[in-house]
Amino acid sequence: MKTRLVAITLTALLPALGMVGYNEVQARKIRHGEIHRQTTRSAQQIASEISTALEGLRGILNATAAIPAISGNDHAACDAALETVATRLTLVRNIIVLDTHGKLICDNMGWASGMDFSDRDYVREAFQTDQVVVGEYTVARVSSQPILPLALRLKRGDEVIGVIATGMRLEWLQSRISQRTLPESSFITVTDRKGVIIARNPDPQRFVGNTIPSQYSHLINAAGPGTLEETDDDGTERIIGYQPVKQDNPFYVSTGISKDVALKPVNQATITGLIMLVSGGLFAFLAATYLGRRFVVEPIHQVVNVVSRWREGDYMARTGMAGLYGELGVVGASVDGLLDELELRRQASMTAEEKRRLMARELSHRIKNTLAVLQAIARQTFRGQEQEIASFQSRVSALAGGYDALLSEDGQRADLSEVIARVMKPYGAADGGPITLDGPPLQLEPDVAVALSLILHELGTNALKYGCLSTPGGHLTIGWQKNADRISLIWQERGGPPVSAPEREGFGSKLIRNAFPGCYDPQISKTFAPEGLEFQISFCTLTRAGQ
Image (cartoon, rainbow, N blue to C red; front, side, top):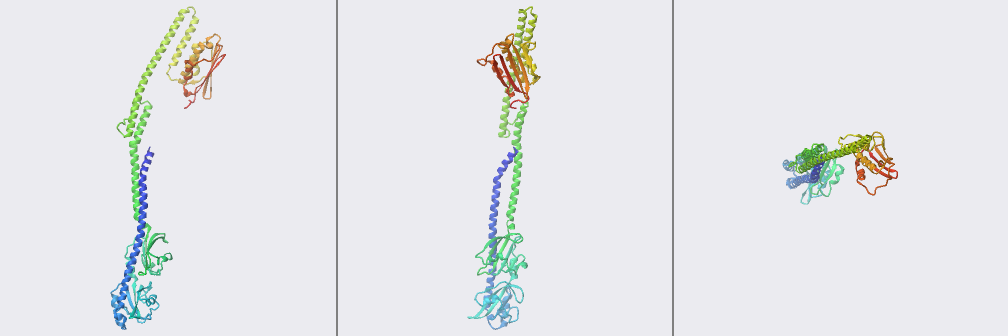
C-alpha cells in the first residue's frame, strides 16, 4: 500500500517535473539568445565610441590644417600653433607637419626639422586623397609609444604642399576600454584593419601589438556584425560578438563572455528550483506516507485485524469505524454490519444445533427403549431358551451401541478394525459367526470413522435383509489394506441368495455414495456378481485431496 501511495504521489509530481524541465530549457534558450545579442551590441557600442573619437580627430586635423601658420613658411609660428592645439587635446601626444617629401617641417614637441617620415604607409596614402587617412598600429619614431596615426594632406589652393599628421594615444584608448567592468572570463579586443590588437581588456600588456589568432582573421572584413561560439585553449566556452571593419570605422571590435558565467543566473535558478522541487517532493512523500498510513493503511489493517480476530473466535470484535476515515469508514461500518449479521446467524445456528443434538439424543434414547422392549418381549416369549435369549440380547445391545458411535462428538481418532468390529457386532462379528474381519491396525480421522460407520451399517442391514446374512450358509468377509497414502476396504458376500443389480437407486445407495467426505477423494465401486455382492471403497489418509 505504501508503494502505491508513493507511486500516486510521484505521478502527481510528474506535471511539476515536466514544467520545471520545460522552463529550464526555455530559460536557457532565452538567456542564450540574450547573450548573443548582448555581445553584438557591446561590440557595436565600443566601435561606435572609437568611431566618435576618430571623427573628432578628423575634425581637429581639418581645423588645424586651416590655420594660416600651418600652411605658411614660418616654422616658429607653425610650432607655436601646433603646441596650442595639442595642449588642449588628451587623445594625442604630437601633431606634425611634413613637406611634400615626407620631411618634418614643424611639430608641437620641438623635434629636429628634416626627420624623414616618408616610409610610413599612412603618409604615402595621405598624399593620394583629400580624406583623413587612418593608419594601422604604429610605434612612434621618437617616443617609441604605440599610436594610431591619422594624416591629412595640406593644400594651398590646388597645390599640395605637405601632410599634417597626428596619432591617437593607444593608452588613452586602453584606459577607456579598461574602464568597462567585465564579467569573469570575458574580454574586449580592438584591432586595426590588419588584425593587430590595439586595445585589450583584460591583460593588455600580453595582447596589445600582437595579431589576433588566424581562426578569427576572416571576421575582420565580414559582411556585418555577428556572433559565434568558440572554445579557447584553456577549455572555456565563450560566446563572441564582433563588429567588422567598416568604411567609416577602420577597427575590428570583438567582445566575448563565458557561457558558464553568462548562464550562472540560470544555473542558480535551476538549482534553487530543483532544491525546492526536491524539498516539495520529499514533503509530499512524507505527507503521503503519514497521511496514507493514518487514513488508509491503518484503517485497512484495522479491518483486516478485526476479520482475523473474528475468524479466530473473537466474535465480539468490531472495527468501530462508522463515521471515521471517509469511504474507508463506510467499508469498516459495512464489515461491522456483516459481522453483526454473521453473529446473529451463528447464534441461530448454535441454537438450531443444540436442538438437533437434543432431538438426536432423544431419538437415540427412544430407539434404545424400543430395543429394550424387544428384549423384554423376547425373554417372555422364549422362556427356557436362555442361551438363545442371551445371544439375541447381546446383538440387540450391540445394535444400540452403534447409535452411540454415530452420535459421538468426542473428536478422537479411531482404529479402523475397532470401528468395523463395533458396527458389525450386531450382525455376529464378535461371536465367531459368519463374518470375517481381516486387516492391519489403521487410524482414522473422526469424520472418516463416522462416515465409514454409516456405510458399513447400511451394507450390513442390506446383507441381513437380502444378502449373505439372510441365509444360514452365507458368509461375509471384510478386508482392508493400506497402499501409499490410500486405504482400501473390500466387502465380499458369499453363499447368500442370487444377487442382481437393483432397478433403481434407493436411499441406502444414495447414503453410501454421499456419506463419505469428498476432501478424502473417495472412490467407490460395486459388483453384483451371481455368487454375491462385492463392494470396494478407497480413500486418502495422509494427504487430503485438494489440500
